[in-house]
Each structure stands twice: as structure tokens, then as C-alpha cells.
Length: 145
Image (cartoon, rainbow, N blue to C red; front, side, top):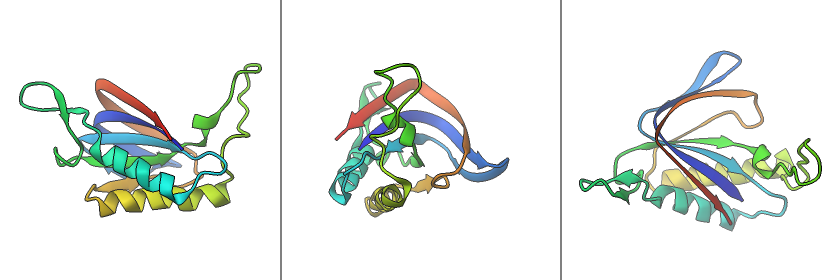
């Protein structure tokens, strides 16, 4: 599993021009699932996302989590995180999990974030989503387990 978390002031996700999800201050998290990933990894990723200290404290240090600042998470499924371009310029997605196996893991990560107290919004799994976001910093963190 791999995720890319970006600190944002706000983000809006649409499908076919229709609004689906919107958050204020928080994290947009692009979440990729590799063939063979398991639920335990989804839970660990959720815990990492909830506790990432990427928001500034009173001293200006990145010392606070999305939980600490009362932020939200927009969790977006992103199989292209496992696009391999080592051979040629067209990505191969052979490492990405098939949708039928990936969706339950994605949903488990979202549910674990909620259980941890993080307000979570998602896109529509497998849809052609458009995301408008205002990055804050910018701060971008990549994590793979």
C-alpha cells in the first residue's frame, strides 16, 4: 500500500461535473493498493494518516496532526500510484490490485480513519474524478508499507 498525503486549505471532488465530496483544512490522501495487500496494512495506513504531524503548532513547527487541528481527510483511490515506467514511457499497472479486491481495502482504510476520530470524505471508487484543491505549504508526504 502507498499513499500520498497533501496538506490543503480546501478541496472539492466532482464526478461528471457533479459535486461528490468537499473538505476544508486537512489532507487530501491519494491511496494506492498493490496486489497482495491486506486489511492490516489498510489499518496501519489509516493510523499513519491520522497521526501525521504535518500541521504547524504555535511555534511554527510541523508538530500537529489532522486530529489535533480538527481537520478533515479527503481519501481518494488511486491505482496509478503503482504505475511503473521503468521500461518505456507508458505506465504498466501490473502491481496495482484489481478493483474487486482493492475496494474493500480502500473502504476499510476510510472506516479505520473514522474510528480514529478523523472526519473522512471519499470519492467514488473507480470513477473518473476531478479534484480541485488549494495546497497549503505545499506539504506532500509519501508513505509505503
